[in-house]
Image (cartoon, rainbow, N blue to C red; front, top):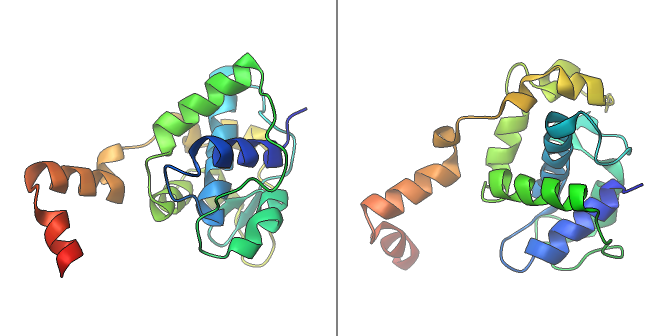
Length: 171
């Protein structure tokens, strides 16, 4: 069975060099990969626990494997990169397409929405487990409004005012 560490290794090996994957974003993407799997066919992608921590859903194994990076980008997998099944590859590509372009804090905000599994589970200091059934019964599987994200605002600003980001960079 594929583990959350396998999913994290896949994400880093496939997208770690073309984007800035932090431990925070890696954990949220693992969570949203599980959401994608459950919403696609009702089956989990991995059986590892997902817990409700202060900044959203966390796979403890992934967090601990990558915590030495702190806030820095993760550039190398901490475990071997698995060969995923056709189903797993489809789920990961779908997850990346839907969530990979989002900022880490967009991912946190998405996971914290009212009606989502994290908001139904989180209790300060408890690290309670978010079950697959709770994910299926939550608003996480319904998707989200991309226009409400920071990443979308940056894309729109760049399209509308093409020199804005250059001006910010030069200031």
